[in-house]
Amino acid sequence: MLGKQIEDDFEVLRAPLESWRQRPDALAGTLLLTIFLQALIISIEYFMIRDATIYPYKDEVLTIH
Image 1: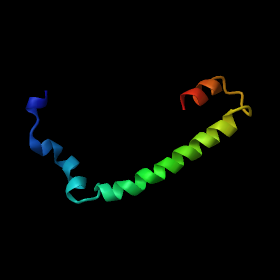
Image 2: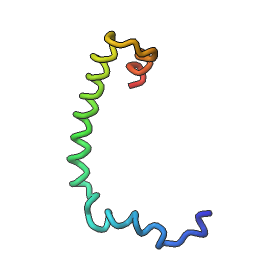
Image 3: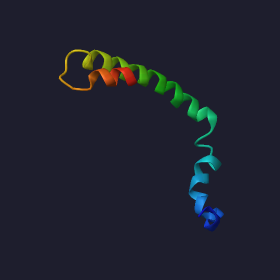
């Protein structure tokens, strides 16, 4: 299946890399922001799901996340 594809099939994937939109400097800020967003989501899950809900799998959500 991969043998039937040509390089032009993947040209849409090369555009962001060639235009430097996905360079390491641009992605670094986004990755740092996701650290804080993840901490916010975990704290919201912990305080909201801990005991103020009737959700049946709340313990599993807190354990997995």
